[in-house]
Image (cartoon, rainbow, N blue to C red):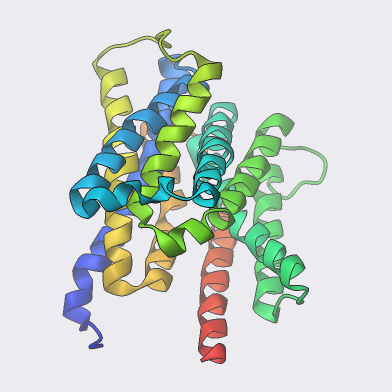
Length: 307
């Protein structure tokens, strides 16, 4: 198979960066809705999953025709997709948005990026194999970055609430589960189909608790704009662009470029919502983002070593 030239990779690079920026800004839009429009996080999560799920399932149908329903043929796949939707999708969406409501988009997004460290820990335990040196380095960077982000270097005080820290770490754990659980499904079915059905299942099941038909928040043009952005750009287009970028530049490069997401969240929160983000916050951010790069590159080296 012919490798794409540097010029041919440009669209893939731009799409990966765009998806990261879309995701980052959507977190700030959520913060805007929570703080200024009094929208309930659970309500927003429910409708985000339902609307985005419908759009992605329709997209899957246009691309795969009847194959989009293949996930519903075997009992084992049905159980997997139900677990992914109810436990994986709901958990990762709600913990992230609730973490934003307790702190801010920048802090919540950065804390969620500790998730890959939990993924490494899970596979180390599952395979009964000690992590490699780079993975230990990533753990140190993640812990150091989190320490600076939540304490600004002081062991005596937290700069965010204990509740915000708890939900931020819970969000990272949910991201790890969300990453690991659907692996079997993604080996058989398309990402668009799995994610679309997962979101739709998650949204419908979560609606039994959240009762989304009761309108939440103050609705004006700003509310509609932020809500629409989260659905269209922060979910559907971001997902589509990321998948397209993977086919052009590969998963490793695409994942590394998506590390721009916390920076996009931080910058938009600082300049738009005037969130205070100090030197220690930026250092902590850089350390946590470095863990993503280190883990992604170490994963690539492992693959090369097994060839």
